Image (cartoon, rainbow, N blue to C red):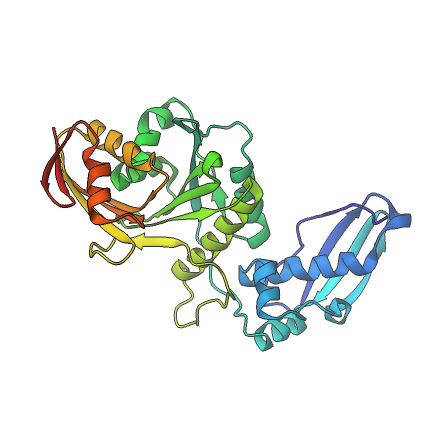
Length: 339
């Protein structure tokens, strides 16, 4: 039986130094697994140095963490604390040899808004326990990327609603986030019933990256999301002139940056003129209710919106699906107006 242990925050962490000390709180010293503990410490240090989750590093270099004790200057006990002094230069060399770039620039900070789909309702996630948010906050410490949650007080509740989030109103998200002074905003829309999760990564200039990931449970969805967020954080950090982080065989999420509007196989672009934004939100909900269609991206302007659909349905069947919404008036194939 392997003893349970708790990894404490590393002391004096910096990838510019040659040594790094980690302290592990040991609950059962007589059953403590030294070899496994050392490997976990090395993995944790590598994740923080690179911003790459351990499974993706292993996919790139299966033997990356073999003989982990070779990357340790010294280790020993101080009472019920196990102390590991890592050879940082040795770990850096091993990562670079494996083709996994170090993340040597300043980490960007994120504000996290979260919503959850519960049956037919979409609700804001407040301060109550939520597995997705908890995993994100744990990833903040794990990868050294600062993250914070909004207070979700009355001001936040009035400033941002699930309809504005799912409608991809960048202005509403940025206005609600402005009180926190955080430049980068992550918005999460968990859909447990559909075993998927949507995300939006907003910038202060109004641009955003969006996508949808799948996962059978909250932990699986959170793992997929964390990998995407870390990859994105690398891309917007001050790592100018560095090569992108190597992440092997990471499933590509369906993403768009201010979505492209051309029609491609398996994808239809619906254009809607509207007056009442509530009606538009109802139409989006109507389309999403179909099991045959996935909304890939949405761009909403002052009087019209573009909805990119991923589907195997034909043009005619897709048109019938949209036109079935009672407030829709047909103009031409895939172009409509809302009464």
